[in-house]
Image (cartoon, rainbow, N blue to C red; front, top):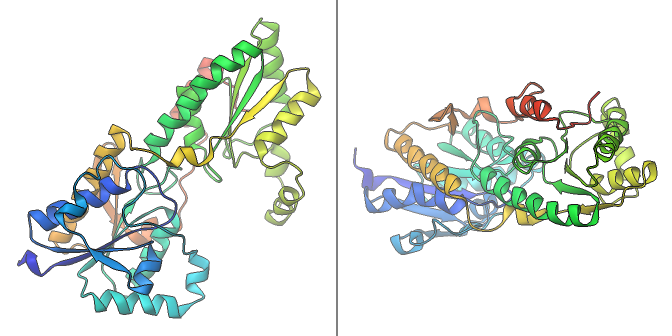
Length: 357
């Protein structure tokens, strides 16, 4: 095989997170320097592929990016539902794939990115997906890169909140990212020693939350740490239809679920309650050592697939072994926290409240 004839396209799509540059480097650095391939980076995700905005990546472009957060290629969101309704956009991506004479397109992203990747595969393009998201909710991999960096950041927030909670005898709510999956809140909550952790997979009862706070107070513990995923739902909400739930949330007078729970706590107790929302800080900054290594392994593994012309796959890690599955097995599937997950069991053993009976 004449590797010099291979031309690889690469793009980052969806929300940014730590480790994207490490993954780009993992694919492109050996491709360019070891195999003499051409690597074309498309700017701002699938939009760059549509519009043909690109740069040929050189060794100098890849130097020093291992530790950088964000993405040197830029990113954007192209909602899958809009794409499938707009064949012109799909046709334009196919056109530019052929215009740049790509042998393969490597896409770095989460659920939406992989759904689009599978769509392009169905149109005959050679695609490989790499899993990134701080939510860790992508099916087919134990971990996505970006997740552990976000856990580290969120845990540091919880650690810092502990001191002010204790000093002021307050109940402190830390609201973390995670609309549909509670991986980040679960891991950071356990790592930060949270007293209460509320995640979407375990609908909570506010009465159970109040009972836990009262128990701690009765034991002489005047402060409490409550970690809430932004997608946490009550037991009453869990029984609603999708339409009813959307209506209920749209009518909610609070800016987010954390503030609603804080108000409920203050109304039902005399505990002063405050809310901290670290927001986009969870996605920013330099990647952790774990994510640098993971993203690098994913990137170099993707290149090994390209060398074998083995396409239409999504890379992931299971039981600490990197492998790949067909894109159609990954696309459109959400990985949520199992109710019997080891960390939930550990939390129960330690007395952590998950809002359950």
